[in-house]
Image 1: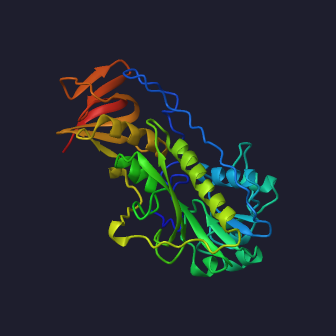
Image 2: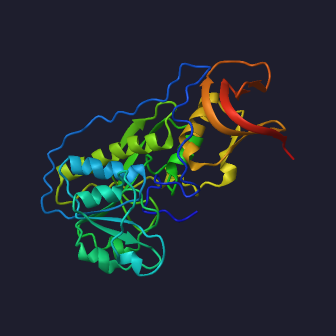
Image 3: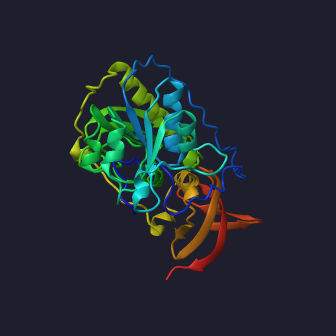
Length: 342
């Protein structure tokens, strides 16, 4: 997978850009409804006049939510940097994004921010230097920034990472937390150094994930939490000198970019864990292989789950869907034809 930085890895998937097919489904075996995420606004008196902030982000929900929350609180960055599409001089050219729906780029342009496209293989620090940043804020950027870029921040280069560091370092922390069945997660605001996601912590905040959230809903929820961390830091110390708490390396974990085999699901998992993993990663567009002994069932989407049900058999077919026994509970899915494991 592409190295994703100083990046948080919660932006658009590099496997696919498909929208989640599960958002409007209602479980036929539970009363579960995909929840509506409501972010509670946090209001800060942010005294950051004259502080020049450059945001690094992508076209995904995470970056858009962070920029929206900053602007709503009266924080006006001077620039937005988004990843480039190809090597060459485009790395220093403003980028236009087609389409009517709001993106982080269209929002930035509407508010008069300078927007640059940055291809890590060719971009030079001169374009960033012209923005004269006091603070570089990374809110989901798909590359590690070179030292020549981070050094341009007069006060600090900070990253928003959607996990409680030092756990779940790496480019796709949400994927691995969902796969592990984590429901108690959070966001870390930390200084960027030469080590991936290992810089000193400024602040952290926990967040509980409700059942059935899509990947975009999780991104939006955690980006809101992250934006509040940034606003609180700016409010407390608008000119910098933010706290620096070293991460506990003994507690550190790190994961690579997901591969197709990482979408395999074991029926030894609880049904709730399988359900939330499939719901939260459906936008990646990869099929799930549910393994029960020698049987391997290809699953397209998870519809719902019953945490205590017992089928008396590994699987039960119904019109248009199937129920699969997990440990404990039953998962209701739409599946593809069965095959036998080699």
